[in-house]
Length: 228
Ligand code: C5P
Image (cartoon, rainbow, N blue to C red; front, side, top):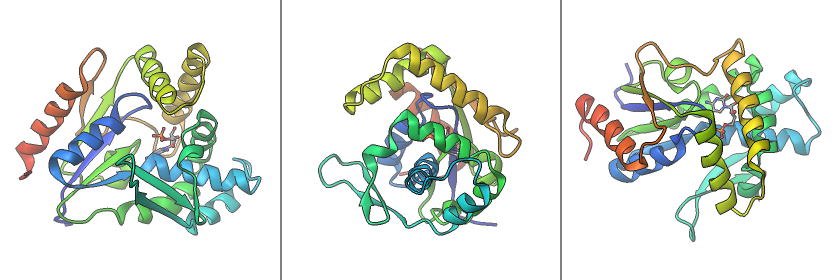
């Protein structure tokens, strides 16, 4: 059994996962895996090569050899994503990239090719794993599993605010539709569909402050292992 504790945080886009994970990281000093960023980087790499979800074998091969690293952002305090020696942090965030990521993520061989890359993030003192299948597939033995949800309208509003803050212009009704489509695809795919693990705690974040959600998650974690 792997002794390094894992907090698995799964849920749809806009459920607050990213923010909750970053705040929990600040409070615990644990490592962070943003698995969505890996799928998004793959989408960027595939897009640059003119590949789409019809090119399963080629995309799986690309996934296995992705030249990808995460580097601390000296200015923003966040993370910069470097793909093939190029900073693709901004390109990663668009809904177009999210949509292609979601289509490629439905291919079983692509998911398999990314498994070990994700598991390699598990290092002492612990890992916070943000994604769709962290508690079900990648870390089935996670110490604590949380599944965050929120109403579709609230999730679209949050994504809209986030994208606006990042200088990306999108209209809310269009975003709501894209998010609904991505959720439908993520939840209905045959491999690693978006769903809570049997032993996950489901937390509805609709109308809740981020601080109160972080407190709930830290409470669950503190019951299972020592956090600083
Ligand atoms: O979380 P984020 O919106 O960045 O993820 C982009 C897409 O990557 C998701 O819509 C999903 O299809 C895919 N994904 C996945 N499994 C994960 C993380 C992301 O299938 N663990």
